[in-house]
Structure formats: structure tokens, C-alpha cells
Image 1 (cartoon, rainbow, N blue to C red):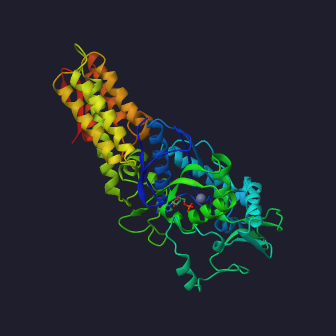
Image 2: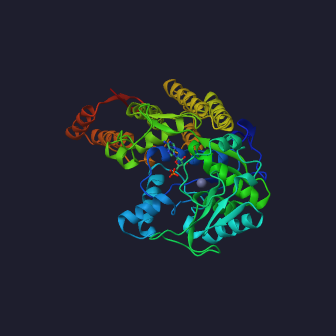
Image 3: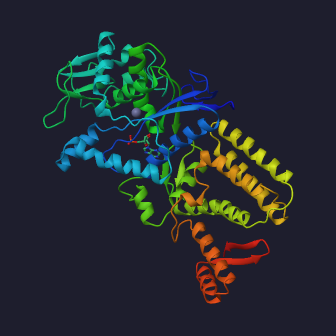
Length: 470
Ligand code: AMP
Ligand code: ZN
């Protein structure tokens, strides 16, 4: 197992990752609020969760990951009300589109996707404990967490309680709070809203308690990693810590990881700018989901990701370098002993790739290792150094790092005109070669013309046909 260093938002420094149970990583990531289709910003954060999961596994940890689905909160209730349907009728289609987007970007399904509405009793149990211990109070059927009862409040975000006290004019629509800074754990039912029975009367949970209840249920009262986007540091995660630790008297989470936001053309995404893209928006424009995954993984999670259509082209270009090497390799003749220099390059790839991941998920280093390897393989092909079994060894090396990257095999992705079409081109070339073998020159010429029209240049060599884009 490689030593892993991660940046902990709690304390704001790089730290060695030391899970509660050696060799196991228990990870919670805040999932989507299922009130609309997720946008590519949300997807950046979720993809970060996928890369974290795959990296942990690559580095030798057994991973248990939980991602909640927030299917009751102000936004879902408002949406259902406007649409004139029940809450589950309103949220269910967005769960479906969310999972569809995960699949489209080859994100693995995590071990559990708990829904808030299915964990109300667990939330009530924590709230009862908090009241019992003097950390929460009931007013008119609602329950609030008493921030003043938690001396550690603010440790994650640097939120200063005393300063907040001075700015006490903060607007609050929640009457009955003893202190404006207190936050709702349980909200008494309002007319027309969905509600659940509780010891304080009918109502619904606050958003923050949802995540405390679901994370602790599946991962234990103390678990290893909690992550989400940077906007969740305050108040969501700060409040999760306050509730959970006040209820259990145990540390809630050892390591907090936060992904920076995605912006579009240098600007914050917003409805008014029309740049709040969903994945289907991009697919409709002919963008490649494979390129999007590559683009996302190529920017460090603690850096803002500036999405532009050009950057997507750049991602496609990088992938083509790997695809073209793979294609040349397939047509390279194997001869003699396995090549020693190639074996060494394979070993170096594995080492450098793992070292990159272990350094706070430094994918720039991991990808540099990949492209150094691609270059070595290309040189070996040029120099006719592909020995017995080398082809498979190279494919295995790509497969090995692709356990984390999840983008390298073009056959696993859809093909299309503006998309990554390498597999299709390879098929056309194979058809052309078959036609030539059968002396069907009309067909072989027609295929060649079609490829030329698509900007593909062919070169017939003793090792087979090579191709590149004009
Ligand atoms: P929400 O459904 O609003 O709770 O957001 C789901 C996840 O997406 C959270 O982890 C947010 O922090 C994250 N998120 C929201 N906006 C962006 C953005 N522009 N870029 C990256 N992540 C985001
Ligand atoms: Zn959450």
C-alpha cells in the first residue's frame, strides 16, 4: 500500500491519510438535491468523488462510499408544489437522470445511495439525543440546534462566532429561534407541505441533519473522509460536525476534502448567463462525454475548473494520442524477446502514476507518467522493438492505470462524427484492407475516399496501415 497524503480542510494542511481501520476507507460525499437535472458543476464534484474512490482502491484501500440523495428540502418541496405532484413523483425522475449522467461519465456506482425520506427515524433519534443533552431546543413544533452550546463550532470553516454575534441583524425567516445563528434540525409543518410524525408534532427534517444521519448510519459515528464542493464547507459541513459530535461526543470525520467549483468561460455559471449546462446540453452539441471526463480529471480538484469548448477539444486531442498509439501497436509485428526498455517504462509508469495519486490526487503527475509511457511505446514501435508478448503488456499497463482514469479504452465509449471515432476509423481501415486482399479495389477506394473526406490520412507500411488526422 502506498502512503497517501490528502489536504484536510479541517486544519487546512496536507496530512497522511490514516483511516480508522488500516487498509479501509469509509467515504461520504454529499449527493445531489433531486429538484432538477444536475449541471456540469455538480458533475465535476461528483466526478472528483469517483476519482477519489478509484484512487483509494488503486493505492490498496478497500473503499466503502456513500452518496446521499436529498429528496426533501425547500427546493424539492417548492418544485413539487409548483408542478402539482407529490414529493416522490417530483423527485424520482431527477434521481433517474442523475444516475444516467453518472453512467454516461463512467462514474462507478457507490455502495449506497440513501434517500433522506427513507431515514427520518434516524434523524429523529439524533435530534432527540441533542435535546436531551441540551444542544437543541423545541419552539412551536420546530427544533433548533443551539450553536452557543458547541465551543468547537467554526473549526472547519473558520467561522467566528463572536463576529457573527455583532452582525446579529442577519435576516431570519425562522421565528422562535433563541439566537439568529441557530439552525433548524426539524421544521414544523406548513400548510400544504409534506410532513412526517415526530415527538414534536408533524414536520420535516432540516437539510444538515439528513447528512449526519445517513453518513453515521452507513459508515459509523467516526469515519474517514467526508467530501463535497467548497460551497458546502459553511454552513452545511460545519453544522454536520456540530450536530454529530454534540450527539456522539466522538470525532465525526477525520478528513474533509472539498472540490473547487467549475466555472464556464471564466464566469460563474448562472441561469441568466445561459451557461448552466447539463450533460445532455453538451451531448446535444456533439461534445464527447469521454473528453469531458478527461477534462475533469486533468484539473486538480482544489483548483477552479474553467470549462470552455476549446478545453474539451484539447482533452480530445490528448486522448487521441493514446488511441493512435494503441492502433499502431495493434499493427506492429512482434519479434524476438520482450523489449527490456519497454518493460522498464511500464514499471516506471506504475510507480509514477501511483506516486502522483498519493500526492493529494495529483493527476497532472499521473497523466505526465502516462504520456511519457505513450512516447516510449511509440519510439519502440518506430524502432521495431516490439518483442514477444509486448503488445499485451502495453495494453495491460494502459488497463492498469485506466482503473482510475476510466477513459483510455475507446471501445467503452460511444462513437460519433464529432466524437471520438477512433474505433470506427479502425474498423473502416480493416474493411479496406480486407477488400484489397480480395482484390475488390472499388470498395477499398471508396473506403479510402470516405476516410479522406473525414480528414484521415492513411499510410501503408510493412507493419500495417497507420492513420492520423490532417
Ligand atoms: P447541490 O445539489 O446543490 O447540493 O450540489 C451538489 C454538489 O455539487 C455539492 O457538492 C456542491 O458543492 C457541488 N456544486 C454546486 N455547484 C458547483 C459548481 N459550480 N462546481 C462544482 N461543484 C458544484
Ligand atoms: Zn451533505
